[in-house]
Amino acid sequence: MSRAGETSVSESAAKKLRMAVVGCGPIGNLHARAISGSPHARLVAVCDPDAARRDQAAARWNVRAHATDQEMLAGEALDAVTIATPDHLHVEPTLAALGAGCHVFCEKPLATSPMEAERVVTTAAERGVYLAVDYNRRFAFGYRTAQELLAAGRIGELKYCVIRASDRTPRAAVARHPQVMLTTFLTHFFDLLRFYGGPIRQVQAVCGREPAGELMRSVSLSFQFAGGAVGTIVAGYRDGQTRTAEWLELGGTTGAIVVEDVTRRVSLIESDPDRQQTFAPNHFVGSDAFYDSLVEHVQVFVEHIARDAPPPVTGVDGLAGMKLAAAASESLAAGRIIEVPDL
Ligand SMILES: NC(=O)c1ccc[n+]([C@@H]2O[C@H](COP(=O)([O-])OP(=O)(O)OC[C@H]3O[C@@H](n4cnc5c(N)ncnc54)[C@H](O)[C@@H]3O)[C@@H](O)[C@H]2O)c1
Image 1 (cartoon, rainbow, N blue to C red):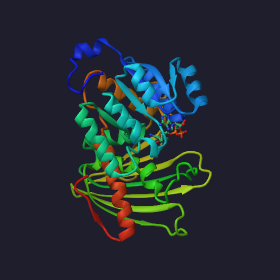
Image 2 (image 1 turned 45 degrees about the vertical axis):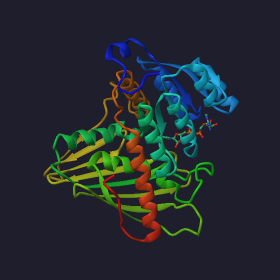
Image 3 (image 1 turned 90 degrees about the horizontal axis):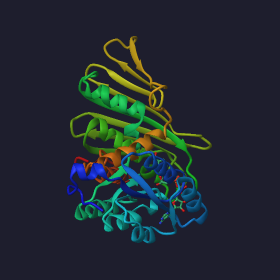
């Protein structure tokens, strides 16, 4: 177990990180796939209270299975763990792993409240270990290409960012409170706004009308960035939708970038709207399935930890996501703009 900043490059390059996954659902298995495919780490164990799931994952990845994270942390001398438990069960295993001196890669959302997220971020800092949160969209073809074009100055200075997103209506185990969309789904898009536009200072929200206490199914959010640009997210849940549907436009002083499909196509519109340059992934190099961005993010985390560098998406980003969700919620309740301290 190494503390952040204490391992020399040659020392870390020589040894593989001993890693484990907490939670053996579909996402935990993606974490396991990523770690198993990394040249910098060795997956040694998984844990899950569900015996069938942990045994299946242990057999699939050829590692030991534990019923609890405490048992696993006590027995495996781990350097880093990934957390893939349900949203409301991220904090306890994250704190336990940080307490055991492990670096942690936690699925989004980092917690279920800003207070809990703050505690997790503070604990990582006190323990001197790295903490990352899985905002994997930053690694998906369309969003990454848009960031590269923006950074290369192809649309001038960013002035607006518009996102439309929908997902299937969540199952009851996930829909634990009416505004769950803000923390479980829109947290990704709060992060994308910050990825492109930097810190946010104002949030305003309105939502569609639903019977009291029922799941919020549609919401419209407006943001002002500290740098002066504006952003909008319009999102909804649809019954039976098979995957997320997402669309993004970045508008700048000299052009616009449109991500029509995050896995397939990005358009750059410079001066003439009738002349667009399109970008598509190379199907022969790399991969273009949506969840490859999640696998890549885990591997980027591992590679950074192995050379003792801070991961690209940190607990502080996860905390900002929680604070923006809380500000949106406050705006819905109060019916006014909420000022946030440059998140
Ligand atoms: N980044 C993304 O794009 C993305 C996509 C989908 C889901 N997610 C997130 O990934 C997480 C997991 O999603 P999933 O669909 O695999 O969930 P899931 O509910 O299918 O699986 C979670 C597993 O964690 C286990 N678990 C519960 N408490 C545990 C504990 N204390 N220790 C160990 N295991 C425990 C459960 O038994 C279950 O097997 C969620 O937070 C979800 O929001 C992220």
